[in-house]
Length: 453
Image (cartoon, rainbow, N blue to C red; front, side, top):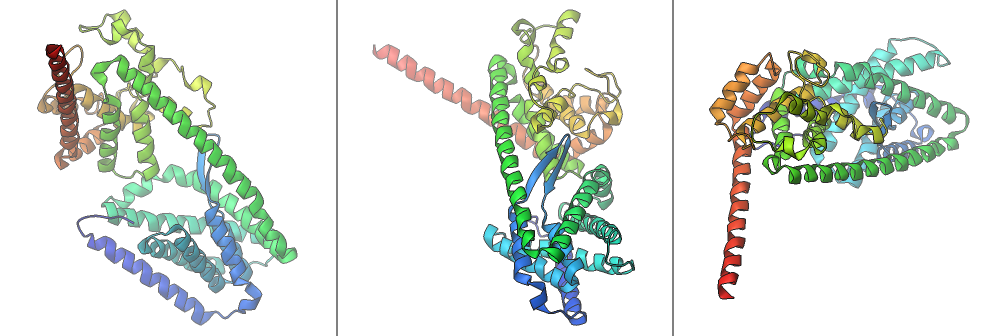
């Protein structure tokens, strides 16, 4: 799951423990439970599981985003119809087929299968304690409980993996996912539980109709992929708009790129962020200043101190919601732009445009705010030269708790001590030197041509 130059023995032990535990669960289930494979039609259910993984896709419901993968509903239905052992075999053979199709690395297949086998085995023990008849509405209640336990166990096992792999406190990871558990996972539990009940009902009455469920899911996948392509094109448009901004203000050239990279580095040292959250931070960091296309050149490039009127004018780059009005709110790009408007909020509530305070400001923007301030201080601006690192560090330290979130400042200093911040600065300076060298070479070629004429 995680590749590192230094061996992480605790992670290796954890992965080994997961694999051995999963093998024991399967062996115990095979030894304890007997079943007639002809009654199960194992190959058919494995095929269903495989296609479910192939058709998995992201679904957007208003401001909620979930990864729809109905393989969980299929394996749950197989458990209630045939028992634990056939269910585990469906999971193992289904993921094996998907592993071969997608050319996963072996460790990814082994880890994924282990998660599912262990979760379903523990889940089976708890659900066996609920003695109810196999009839409605009791079966719906049992399926919902089963699905909820499975999702919680899977989350815990995955968080343990991240904790060992990235050396992040398990408590920090669990707390960071509280909102997701209370919203997204509840919706996933309900959706997968209802699908499992539908699958069971179809199998018991009209087995051949089970495969027809994949028709609407295939259509949904096509629609969602089309929407994602539109999002990609919109993101390209935003990048182009950002390039126009940087062409307009040469003093902030590639500022947004650096802010995005600084922010991701800080977030990793802060801990508890998923890959999707890190991607969100990078995207918002990239477009955080896009509103400056509205600011007049005489204000944006003024070498001296701004007047009160000019300062109010420059605030327009976050006060005017000039882009999101034209983008449907359910699109992620609208969310990125709304978040980008908050990068001038302050931890003490004295920022703008809304005067948000403390944790009212999304953590992603509290991180981007620090990254933005650091890059602004350590690079040249039209109104001043770049500040030395020591001066900028002292400014951040003094602003912790007032302008910036102190926990984010701590994460920044951890990143600085690791040398990653300085490495990015050095990369920027090297690019500037190359640009200057290329410009001198072009000038030299031009002067040589002029002299020859």
